[in-house]
Image 1 (tube, one colour):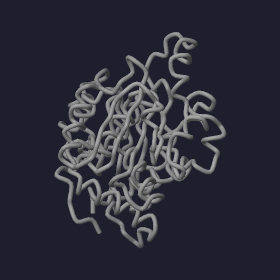
Image 2 (image 1 turned 60 degrees about the vertical axis):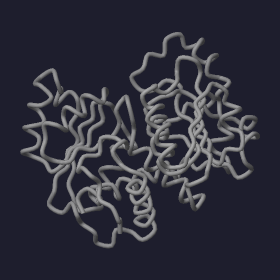
Image 3 (image 1 turned 120 degrees about the horizontal axis):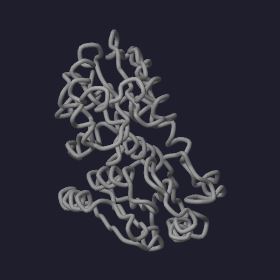
Length: 311
């Protein structure tokens, strides 16, 4: 079982967790994946609302199964039904929902919307994705690396592509878990300065490393893990598609780029993938890909997260 409890019942980002708490959570996820929940029912008699202002497949299915596996009941609320901040204020909606349900899983746009909702409720609120971060995805990512490599500390994780919410959560997780994190993005697509500063401080605290630059070859050199994501995140304006593809093409994860990584490199992608853009068919379907286990691990990471909050 986990040795540490989270400081708050909310899970709005990875920022409040220290390295030990994060490590415990990932190790518990691996244990539960291998051993099963064995009658563990911390959500028995509890209802969890999944509030999705953005569409989802993996997030919705993995959370619904995780909640059911732990004995709870879930249902989906769409933006058309709730209309946060339009039909009524976010705090008013939160005050009502807290009278009906035992928790909220929220997939929304600005992080401030999530924070405002959480501040108005008396039940746990879980971040299922915002424009700023995607902490549940990072839990699954780190679980996958631990499962394949047997350790996290001392490994080098290279992220190449768009500096987005996934990038931010990877940086936060990796620098708290003793990893070397190398990020390479095109000009103008870098991760936010505030997150870079935060993770630079994490690296000093936890003996990890962080490099942010614009050369994918430098980032991938001697990497144990290579990670990419779509070149235009959900809700962002793609602009001139031809120009976008030209800008990002040097960041494509292909066989040539992977030659610079370690021989036993593993490749991750949080999906959905635009094959032939950020990643080639040969790589995502190849022997170095852990993408499908990574997708499965969303379920196991979220089972552990729910157990830590409600157990």
